[in-house]
Every structure is written in structure tokens, then in C-alpha cells.
Amino acid sequence: MDAAAQVKVLAGQWARDKVNTSAAEVENAGVHIYRPAKDEMAQWLSVRESVWQAIAGEFKGGVRPTRSTWSYVCRSRSV
Image (tube, rainbow, N blue to C red; front, side, top):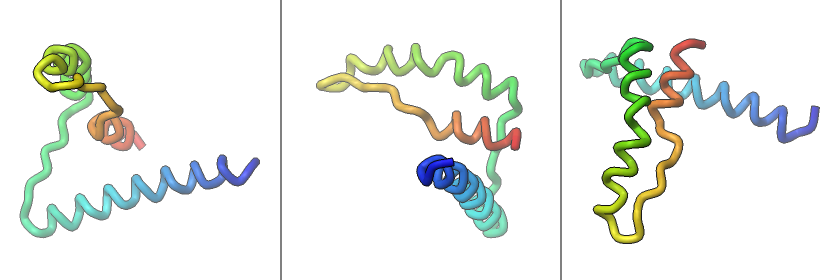
């Protein structure tokens, strides 16, 4: 396994750990974090692209959809 592949695995785990630790800190401070169920997330993600396209014309130069944090959250919840 090359170095980049090794780091990719570690970086992914580090990011998941950081998200979980940060979320726990926020919740311990009294903030409720809403975590949508898988079916709710799927519904939200199903309209994401059309919403991006609909608002793109409102911004000079357009808007280019990027990978959303929500897609990461959706994947990390199943781990």
C-alpha cells in the first residue's frame, strides 16, 4: 500500500472522530443536534441538485454544487 492510500484511511478516520468529538462537546454544552433518519436524509439529498440549479442563476458567475457536509454526515452515521 502506498503512502497516500495509508494516509487516506487515517485521515478519514481522524475526520469521523473529530466530527463525533465536536458534536459531543456541543451537545454537552446543551445544544441539541438534530440527526435526520436515513429516509429523511435521502429525501433531502434527492432535491439537492435541483435546488442548486434553481438558485445558480441568482448569483453572478453561477453556483457550482460541491460535495455537501450532509452527504458526509449521512455516510458517517452508518459507521
